[in-house]
Amino acid sequence: MILALNKEQFKSEYARSIKEVSAQKIMSCYQCGKCTAGCPLADKMDYVPNEMMRLVMLGEIEELLQSNAIWLCTSCFQCGTRCPKGIEVHRVFEALRSLALRNGINRTDIEELPSDILDEVPQQAIVAGYRKFESLE
Amino acid sequence: MVSYPYFPGCALSTKAKALDICARESLKLLGFELVELTNWTCCGAVFPLCDDEHIRLVSPVRALFEASKTSDKLVALCSACFNVLRRTEKLFRENKERRERVLNYMDEEVPKNFADNVKVIHFIDIIAEDLTFTVLKEKVKKPLIDLKIAPFYDCLTFRPPKEMNYDDPENPRIFSNFLMSLGATPIDFPYRSECCGAHLAVSDRDASLECSYKILKSAADAGAEAMLTACPLCHYNLDSRQLEMMEKFPGFKPLPVFYLTQPLGIALGLSTELLGFSKNKISPLPLLKEKGLI
Image (cartoon, rainbow over all chains, first blue to last red; front, side, top):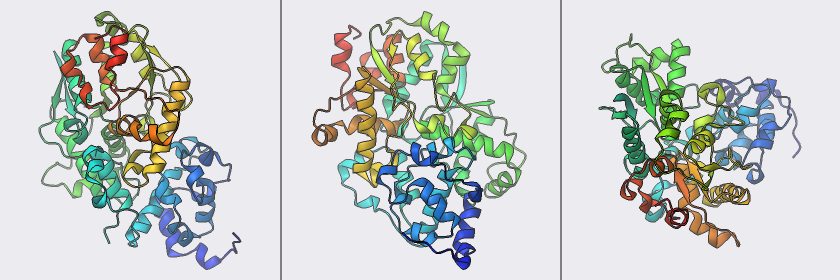
């Protein structure tokens, strides 16, 4: 993927929103990759956590809203625990997910799950699923 | 009998009853009582990670307020509830602006000046700190000799460390110490702090199955005969889905997964009915019979 730095994108409303909603010092990321090394789902992500951080720094938010990475993050907090710069990377993932949901992008339809799964899976997964994967728009 | 206000949560009241019942009954034998809050609602399952989500703190704040009427402590046992309540407690203590915003939603329910001095503690803290593991060891009726259990350190109890401030997030010991005081042999394993796949169980079932499989395999390779978890969702992913693992991963051998409180119940001599093994998909009964524990 070739990226051209684009000042407008860099200062776009989306980029500002991610910084504000995540409340993280995104620009202090120096790409050491410890977040990715600890991420249990990194091998399945199209953009691994440190790539995601880099794209956010460059303002490439729309690219990330279309990624599978933001939906594979389980908020296990390993990335934020290990970041030497104290960035809570999981909050950046959440801000992206939240922006996608607020723009009507939906990941899943929990009501359509087979009833044997819904009968067994604990409520915390169902509530978390509605909170993190289903758009209210 | 010393009593504590207790937030059981949705799963412990329904699908993870064994975790709850063993906790209450075992503590009674040790001289402690868990008193369920009279007015509690779902904690929200996940702590709101966006800085502009205020309304989602209403439920955990309601629980903290209820607990503050009778105590300066609130006990949680479900990992998700513990995570949400403990982080809310810290946020309220440290962030006056967000505290005020949330309380604006709750003006008829919670007074603005409510003394938020309630400390959210984990069930195991009652045993580790108020009873102590040394005393627990003396109270054990049936030591779990020769039972090799791999304690699983779920994400939500131990992370994020800045907010949870609970044990060592990279090298947690509390469940191992607990198991040792019951006479069991704790087995450390490389994947003991990895994520089980969590709520991907409702969105990406293949991905979460693989996460849980890696954890179980890691424990079995390290010599474990069973696993231990405090989290209802980890228990679902690690126990209930082993039938799928047997189909998908050739050579996979099933491993019984205990709730945190079940080995305590066995060691204190609770009846098999109260131990609630009927809900375990991989029954620990053959293993327990082999060890002469039931």
